[in-house]
Image (cartoon, rainbow, N blue to C red; front, side, top):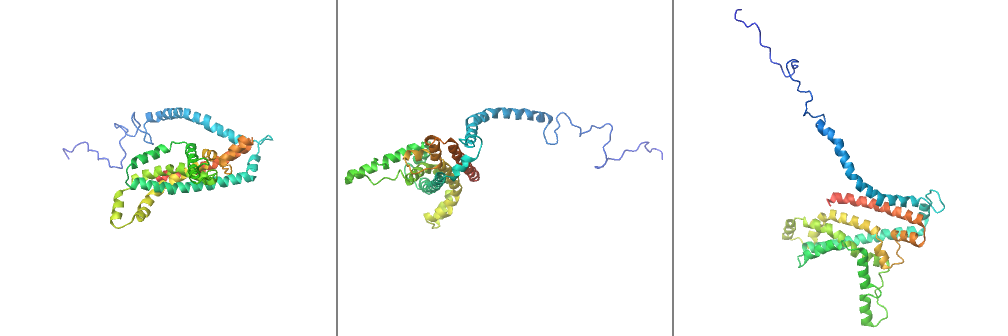
Length: 323
């Protein structure tokens, strides 16, 4: 048929037809700014080792200081605990320590004083934090700030204050003897386990109050007002609204106090409680008084293992509580 074009138009390529090989640019070929399968460009991939090396370089000084001042002395303690006085390497110091009645008594004393102190701090700290946070009174903010300052006080300072008040020649006994004419006052408990317990509760209670006050500051007061308008009393409001919100903070503060009480040395030493032997006091006694360095190091290693385990528990609780 005349007028028919000699060439017909090529049909359009479908979505599954292969692309023509000539005159086209291969879009899948890697270009200068293309990215690899992981989504990073070659320049970024080449920069990764440099950044990693810089991070390791920055981490080297603190790791070296930690190794020099903490890990190395700790390794020396562990090594000394495995070297009895007879020479060689042996677990005999641990066997002797575990078999001694002094260690079992010190372990029991440490555990029950730490648990009792933690319980006392939880109860007292919760009550004091409730008053500071929810009972309006003049100077509440100043008291809350003093709690923060109290955390920086050394433990022996609180013990000395208690000795000044309730010691044998303290203020309380002096008032008693002056009023009654007796030769001695009735307060003579600071050199007993109860005196240690009182000192630890007094010193460590702010460690529970601090996270509690932070938790109470985030509590929605509208819930308290609504519960009060519906006729709920203060005990029920505390039990049903405040206490559930405070449980994570209580758990975090209690875990920290338990770890600190297990390793407290200054309070026991400054109270002069000769019949109260905790694990830190046993380490001091074996190393300084008995010159039994392998035994002292063995007790120290046991104490460190207990403390590290409880600290791990504290970190888990704190992380869940958002502290």
